[in-house]
Length: 291
Image (cartoon, rainbow, N blue to C red; front, side, top):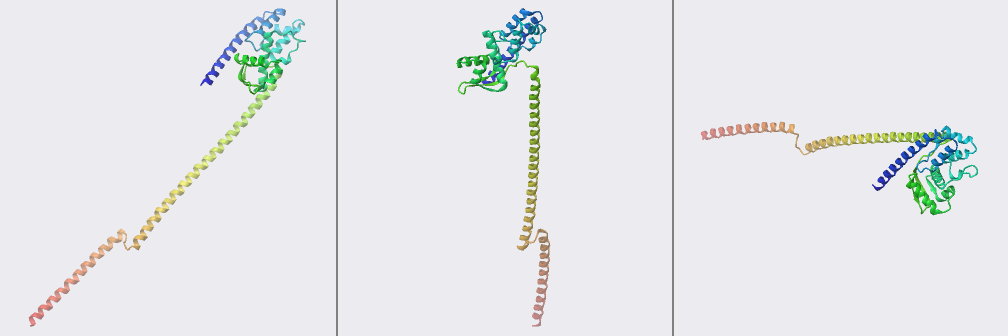
């Protein structure tokens, strides 16, 4: 929860900084329409030391600023403005550019860290020391804390391993000649996305096929189980019928017929017994009278 809140605060602060930067730059763009020569140079100095301005390409496109490169007295400041737009500390040349104030030097170091972050998300201290022209580790760590606090970069400082891990940075200006490289990077990224998507779709189809096979196998197994149950039920009934016949107990229909036959037999037997008794009785009477 705390992490999410911290990220939201940092994001909000970075958005606020971008708004302030845009407003400040707009004011200088309006001013650049009306200044020339040394007045334009003074404006460039103000832009390079302004705490909220880190993009300069729009200013470089202004006609009055472009004219600075045509005058030997002002050309060096046009080069310096180009350095802040596209370059790093290692690109600074004291022979062709004016001296840097402390504020300019500090901002150029900020921009250099942003450029280094585009090449690697983990930047070792030794690389930073070399690129920024810093010899004191404490000074370097103070600078890293500063760029994180100003939301120029989002990341964390790992003092134990001696590097900084970059999550995101502000944007820098892009040279026209760098557009082809950016297009190639984006094209490769799109191609990789297409490959990943195709692989995911293939895996989905394979998963669906496995699922359908599983459902079919399950249904076949259930059918087999039902058939076996029916077969066992039929066999059990047949066994019961066989056991009934072997035990002498006829099935219900046969028992009714045999019961009826038994009744007939008993009636016939009774009738036979009754006739013999009459004949015997008559014989006895006849014998009695003869005496």
